[in-house]
Image 1 (cartoon, rainbow, N blue to C red):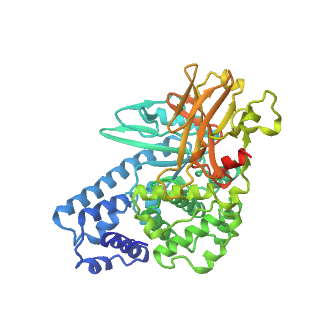
Image 2: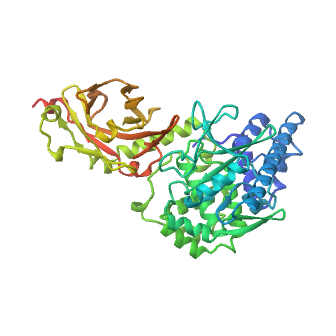
Image 3: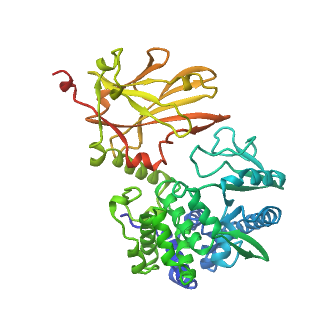
Length: 525
């Protein structure tokens, strides 16, 4: 474990004091330290706690940085005021039961009794899918546009938005639609519509319980529909878990601080027995347990040991066996690249784990695949979540290369949509900077079959429907883990993955696909 920098320790102590209600202590503790104020400011912005840091250290901040802190605090308040006016408008114009407002000004009110204090960039909402058309029309009527980025669909430039003609999900199984934008003067309001709670809670019956237990929260004399205390807690726990374990933005101090504050403030109102039952039903026992342990690691036993141990689970039922090389306090301050490398290391470790290797497919010699008559037991199949067709393929090997032979179904070959099949091999070297060692693409674009590769090897069209990918056998020892993604173009440059997105799909990493590669000398016996 690396030693935290002075500035990181300052932020950590400020957050700990704020949770414990000892807000006046930090200035005295750190007034004599020589601090890098630029680093402290940048860390405060990155960890989204600028107002809290400013409140704790305002008597100690040098004049040339004081204005930076003050301007950022004012910007946060102005953005929240704009968002508040929009929430007020949508609450008055729409059906309050069909649109739940979460996080943002709602959480700011719940935690600080001030809707404008918390750092928040957009308006987060949760809907039932059956209400999408109605809510989309409400937003269009109120001046919003549904849009994505033009160059990179997931990276929007306010001056160059691609307006979408109808609501489009970010991916086929994604929890969220592309954002809605509304311009007010020089400012843009961003509203996000979520249909699921990430990939953790997707069942309609479970989501209905969130809506059926919703309540009205009074914020500056308006009643805003949001989650009740128990479901807000579950939502915050799941959000922290997903950010910390999957997204490269990683764990943030503000989220852990806010969860600790929420539990401290509403401990007597939380129905702990019902929370446990919900966590069991939603298969979140391990998630709750691990997040509670991390809260106590950061904030020194904020949650009672009895409550934490209530959520003890059998490791066999863990959502995903991610193992981190450093504790949560250090992970909070990791760089983006450090976090990415650790996530990749985890995923590679899962792909080549002892348990995964026992399920490896025994590869065939290429001569068997070249025979005209194939037997069904040789084929492997790619199913998808949208259509009835299956893609057949067989991995095989000769003395120099591993091959993947694909038989494309008529439904793909004659599809009106552009599509792509991507074959990625997983790098077996845990400490390398890559997750994928090879990437090969078979795609239909503008009516033509095209090939692409970002690594050694080649692709050959054997016949109209038969395509073979060649990979150097020397790149692997005994095993090759791989993932195959089927994508369909749904609009513009927006593609939806029909089987697995190849990254955030936990079901893949729980049961990765591998093939056993015999040594060349074994083939020649």
